[in-house]
Amino acid sequence: MIFDDFNNIEVKPDTRNHRGCFVQETSYKLVNIDRAGWAFICMNDAVCYYVDPDNLQQAAAIEIDQDLVQI
Image (cartoon, rainbow, N blue to C red; front, side, top):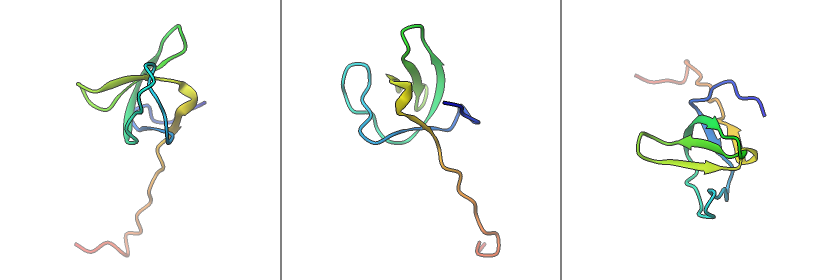
């Protein structure tokens, strides 16, 4: 598992935290991976979870065609 951007990590569908509750599918910041093997991820300063690192994935980069952008 290699990530280019620790500030833009997503969880796979049906990911659960260390207590067994489902985690919202959105972008997170990967803070660290503790000695027990749990990945600590945060959505913002108030919402953080411990999850299995195998359930993390790099957020998909979206390329924008500048010719199609209307200002």
